[in-house]
Image (tube, rainbow, N blue to C red; front, side, top):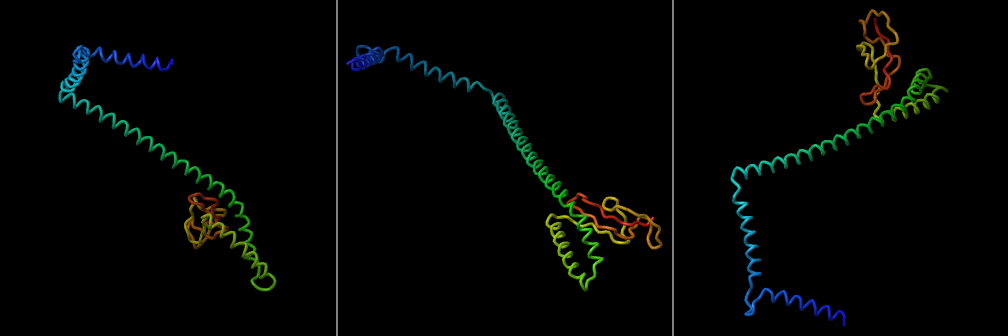
Length: 208
């Protein structure tokens, strides 16, 4: 019963508000006319505010909008460039870390390759020494194949080539009738290069 009474009161209140807007003949009262006039006046005020802007003012507003848009675009482009630089820097750091680790590991094999090369030069190619030579040669080839996979380049030095301090290490300088000064006489041991990094310079004898 309570809910029914509340609903009845609400309906009565709504009907009362509606009646306030109508006179005894059912015509629209001044309240409704005033509300309609206010709405129309507000619309006219908005139209007048828009119409009052001159061409110069519109151009100024357009210029401000273009400046804001350009600033936003510049900010986005700067953020994108910073992100790309960050990715490139991280990629370079990872590549350098890989090269450092590879260089440290591969450098441990250089003395082994030197010893194998000396053994191959001293062992006979026939008889009992041939079996040893074959085994050493197989190990030597496998290590060199690892160097190749890791893109390690052997630095060779041939007699008659000009000495280059960036890739060569002169362990002996001696007078020579056939070669001018700073010309390589012979290579003592090869060097190795990884990318642009010298892992070990080639040791050479140089004419003085």
